[in-house]
Length: 319
Picture 1 (spheres, rainbow, N blue to C red):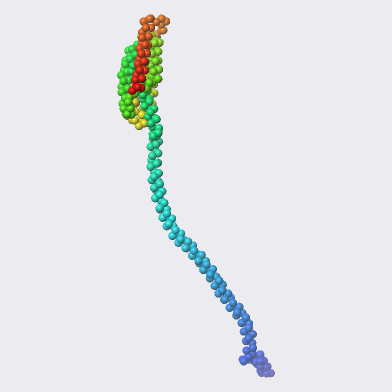
Picture 2 (picture 1 turned 90 degrees about the vertical axis):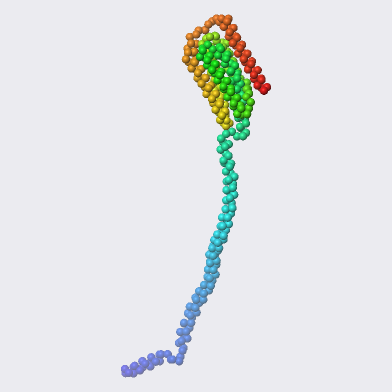
């Protein structure tokens, strides 16, 4: 039985096994395998197409990437042109700077002194004041002897006499200043000095001859003259410096110092004894006829001198 069963199983197995010549089952397997095959091949073609489609994009991207390089090259090529243009423009700026440089250098010169338009006006003013003080000094040389004669104190008489010599030296210095300017020495009537001399006349006519009171009045009148001269010579010396006339400034400065010394001397004389002596004097109610005549004569002499001064002024104007 066992053997029979084995044989039956073998037969059934052989019957179940496919025949070698029959290829019926193969197509089924082939169909199943053929259907997925195209599907597997399709992705490859799609990949090729996508690769081809993507290739132009990469090329475009490459071209775009190359474009900046070209732009950089063009920029570099253009850069030298700008540099050349800058180099060409640079000399123009340098030339402009050179042209502007002298103007800056000229500015301090204008600030150091009066301009060309202002200088002649300042010189005219300077010369005008020179003429004024020149006439004043000339006029004073005629008044000082009268003041010395009217003075009581010997010290005051000596001071007037010495100042007369100093005044003549001052006139000589003024002549030198006129020469430096290329001008002829010429006076212009000084109303201030005319008035100051008239005050000295009033002192002589209003005070008693031989009194210390008259000396006090003469000292005051003389100091008014000195103060006017100090102001005049101080201003002239300053103008001479501004106008670039150092030698004229030095000459005018010497006269200025002399006027200051004379003013200090007059103050010293008054404070030492003349003021004290005048304080002790009493006013006399009656004046002798002789004294009146003497005072009148002194006044007349000064009036005559005044007329002479006016004649001198007319002659100077004519010259």
